[in-house]
Every structure is written in C-alpha cells, then in structure tokens.
Length: 99
Image (cartoon, rainbow, N blue to C red; front, side):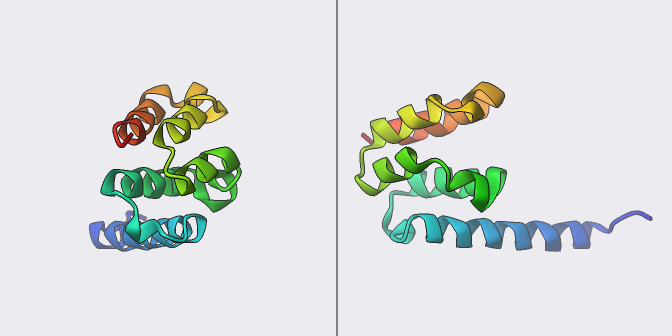
C-alpha cells in the first residue's frame, strides 16, 4: 500500500519536531546558540536520536563552553565519524568555523 506524499510530509515534520525537542533538552540554551551550532545539533539529534546523541558527553560539554574547536574535535574522534565521514565532517567544519 503506497504512502501519500502528504503522510510522508506529516511524519517528517513530526520527526523534525522530536529532533528539535531533543536538541533543546541536550543544550538548554539551544535557541541562544549561533545558527550553525543549532543546525548541527538538530541534524545530529535527527540522525542519531536522543539516546545515541546524548552519549557524546565531551562534545556537548564543549558546546556548553562555546569551545567550538573542541566540539568539532569530539565529532571527529567518534565512531560516527568513521561511519559517515563526509556528513560528520560537514558538521565538524560548521562548528569549527564558529571559533
């Protein structure tokens, strides 16, 4: 049974809403962060889900400290980086550019 485009859009919006909720839980000041940090955090929350992304403890601590280079380094020093190098490098570079 095919899924309508409307249903796909509805489910995608629900997933985005959950990812943003998770991002705000992980970084309490999410809405005050630079846009590139918000994009990175929300994208990783969407990709990994809360349970996996919250395990990036040093990465999140670096974001809270606004240590963008360290936040990027923590992404590069992860299993995720080995699995999805190009995508994760784009996230790391976006954070690093904030430094």
